[in-house]
Image 1 (cartoon, rainbow, N blue to C red):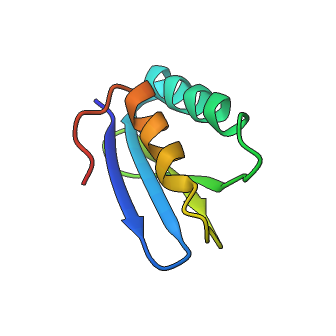
Image 2 (cartoon, helix red, strand yellow):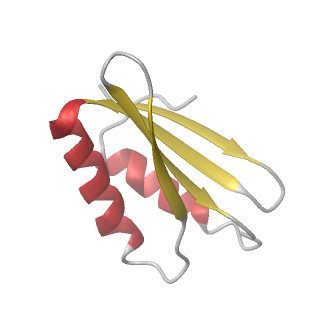
Length: 86
C-alpha cells in the first residue's frame, strides 16, 4: 500500500510517497516521472529508506508562486490510486 503525505507553506509544497518493495517502487517512480515530464516546472526529488523494507519518495516544488504543484500532486495521487493523503 502506498502512503501519501502533503505539506505546504507560502512558496513551497511537498508530497511524500511511502512504498514497500521493488514493485511498488518501480510503479511510484515511473508514474511520477511520466507525470512530471509533462510539465515545464520540475520538482526536486529524493528517496529515503525507512524501516521494514519501506522507502519514501519526496517530491518538492520550490518558489511555486502560481501554485501549479497542487494540480500536479492531485494527478499523481489519482494515478497511483491513493485514497487517503495526510
